[in-house]
Length: 257
Length: 79
Image 1 (cartoon, rainbow over the protein chains, first blue to last red):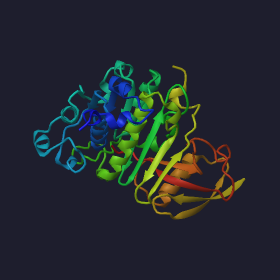
Image 2 (image 1 turned 60 degrees about the vertical axis):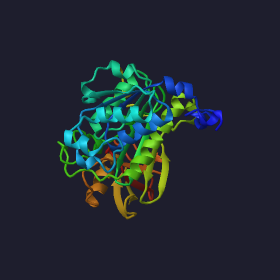
Image 3 (image 1 turned 90 degrees about the vertical axis):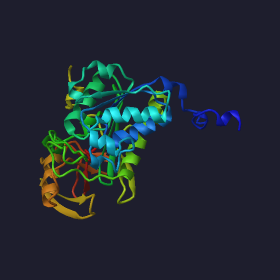
Image 4 (image 1 turned 180 degrees about the horizontal axis):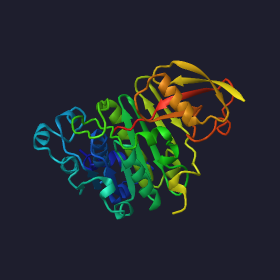
């Protein structure tokens, strides 16, 4: 066995543009610790990210277990906070990681949380929280990568202030109408929306991989390779396309502060 | 001036013809198509080619022309 096999990140170091040192140093804020949050946290940990803050107000229930790597039946019995369970899982995968869990709605966290991190990842289940995360990231100049999914359909959008469109630029009246709803796959804990959203793990895996891949580009300083629009994925039709979202001059995020 | 377009349902591949005024907005097309197909309450976007059309924009300003085919796509909000 040579030195190459002793280095946990040897294979990643062989990707020329990937800056593993920058990955180790980067501070990541992950908002949402559901199915998408589990997969994103797994990819972050295995990619070498260690300074991860996880924000989620929910607790584990049994219906999470088909899609959530870091939750088990005891977590569901104990109604363990999701952010806490994910942090423990991240430590298990990556002993040098130092994740921090916050049991809260993102809207109740201080604004400094956004400024204190280098990249913000949205793994959320409702429009209001997405709008909040997008706007606060934009206003402190932090890249915001948002993922969403329903059944076999998913989407990822990268907002990179001060350039280009943000997540809210691509929203319309149909988003405003459902802003208060939570499209959670959790089921019985859903407060505002029934029935629960269809969800399955393969789409979650695809969408989470795109989110973390884009984060790796950002921290490695390769914005030239970055997804600058939205990626739509439809696993039923075997389609993955990049769509253009233009900056909307009437978007409140881009208006006077 | 009236403009006749087709809207395609991305989930099923079905299409519907709509006759609209150029002053109609993208939001109105989204709502009409979603109602026609009895879509679940949710977020949708309308695209022309690769471009996602802005909700409050009129069809004229969005560059929608007669016989265009627009696609109604669900914007997934689950996590």
